[in-house]
Image (cartoon, rainbow, N blue to C red):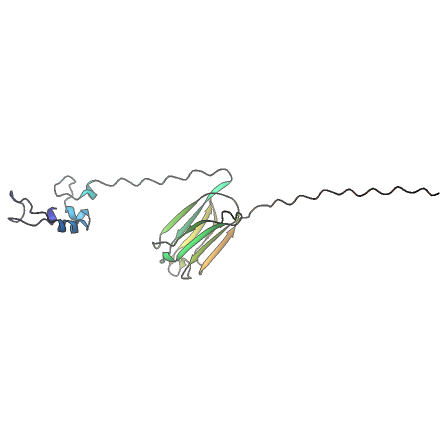
Amino acid sequence: MIYSAVESGSAGWDAYYGWGRVNAGNAYELLKQGCEFAGGPYSDPLHDLALGGKDQVPSPPTPAPTPAPPCPSAQERFEVQIITDNYPGETTWTLTDKCDASIGEMMSGGPYSTSSTPYSDMSACANDGQYEFKINDSFGDGVCCAYGQGSYEVKFGTEVKASGGEFGSSETKIFGTCGPTTPPPSPSPTTPPPSPSPTTPP
């Protein structure tokens, strides 16, 4: 308020007008620049001209994200890590379960908003099987290396299943197997008909 007030009397503070009359418009424009501009250059956090609340009361640290609970035995989580190139809005991807048609596409990502930035997505717990990872670039130059040093990596648990960055419009990686299929039961053996008894000559 002090830095946006209108003088009403002698310059500076006086006993009758104080620092002047409040000008709400000036105060609003000043606050839009941030509290450090509105509060002035004084560093003492309790000074009457100290920096605004932004600097007087530090923000609490951001808590660490809660780790995902462990998966049941024989299951793991997929983690897809993308580092964007200079044109992040061109990149999209999908991860598809090739063994269970009822699941189909289980993860997807992009387009992204920030260049040269790592992004990470984690799946729900999944069975080991066959999966297809497909990454697309709408311009057709991949995520490396003409316009940035982007890359991708797909992990199942701690094992890297697919990685890369240099491709054209798209790249597809298929990994894993659906496991052995149960063979049909063997037919029961047939009992041959009994041989006719020999006839006795007359």
